[in-house]
Length: 460
Image (spheres, rainbow, N blue to C red):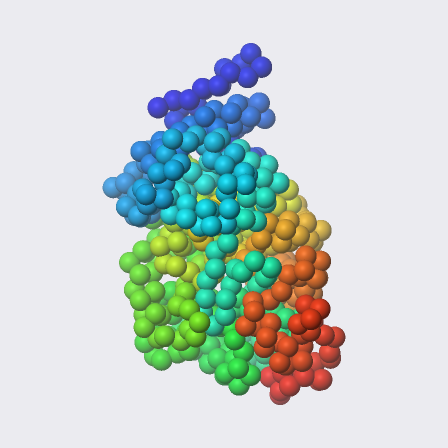
């Protein structure tokens, strides 16, 4: 099925829905690398006009990746909620945009509609939306999850405390954890990317984190971001696993490149549920995604990188995760060249995931060889905060000394909470107040030196 649109006396033809979606995407280096990008701004605008007229039900009837060749396609098709989709079945992509920006699209209406939207629908409508549109619509979308605290409530901004260390030194990790807690970080998760990815090291790191959490009765969850198969073995050995982590992508082949299948994720999900470690809920999965992952693995099947990224959210949605985040600028300038592309991608990822009912956070980050700097991350952080992001990732000094990339600092996120009058998760805020670190009346952290708090014993 082909599509065409005339603009300025020129007729633009697109061979199929896959080509139309790619041409309608905002400019980014990954699509140029793959030979999928529009060849001119005029062609891109024509593609968006044509895409706006596409009926939503075409996405239900069209397999961008063949059903028999891809288990993510099968997951999307087999779990599509036709009842939730029914009110939108007669709409076009443009109609959906109008509805999302209307007063009719209330938080309750968006929650009810989420199971009826496919990732391809979400990607399509995002392509015809300005940054402001993405923010305005996403701000109304609430996805609430729970484990030891409640993530995603209105007026709250959670954070992942990321105390990575280049040699996994336990005292170094403990010092960074203390630093983060003093800034009110860590309600989403205290999560370590291990320098040595092994079962034995994962057990040691989890034991240290769990000991500190239990000693100070911190209402949060901890995680070592090791491979899911390692986490399964750690659970079998009795390790202190709160959340199962895994990087995921939007095609079967790309997930196989990560060494994971839907079956393995199901096994790990069931194993984590059986531990019953949550106190206020049972959302036990933590996923990371990022535009360019499928393309870098040559597993994108000719899809533009934003569309295939949205398909990863269908994988996440199937396992009711506590947390999902895009590591938006981490993959590098081959996929998102500069600050402008990174900012746009972050807003797209947040919008598309929330539209599908996924609790989306972001690592507002860049690699040192990208055409981006900390001002770009400040901009993205504030835009995402205004858009209602579920959580952000913070590292000491905004510089991850193990993964060698730039992110947000603890004080960046603290500043954003102050600017936008946002608070930590309620259970975590109550604990911070109990520890003398937080003033519930003002919603501000107290200024205390580390030696003035009981938490100082953490690195003793």
